[in-house]
Length: 136
Image (tube, rainbow, N blue to C red; front, side):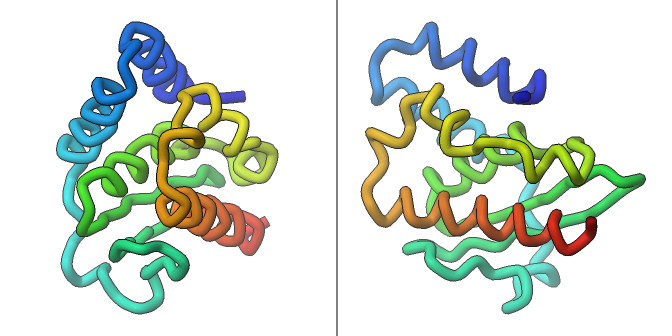
């Protein structure tokens, strides 16, 4: 079910045996992401439930889900990038079918994130799913 971009991350993680290397890889992915325009950092795009400041800006183009995002924390910015790889470009109905928790487990992220970070990831996934569901 995962996109080719997400499968690439899974493959990268298979080569990175040390959790610290994986953590750095996630951060690097976040650094490579285009910053969200300041005008899009508003209360409507802010995700509640995250320890850091997080904004997600969804776009539906030709029935496909896309989103951009931003955070003031490097690791969270990287997690946004990972979620973008998982969801961007999917048809709206497929967004609802993604088992994000299982996909993230493939990366081993769930066991290495703090409770606050895990709650933040869940909040981001919930926002993505709510946005897609509202468009169906």
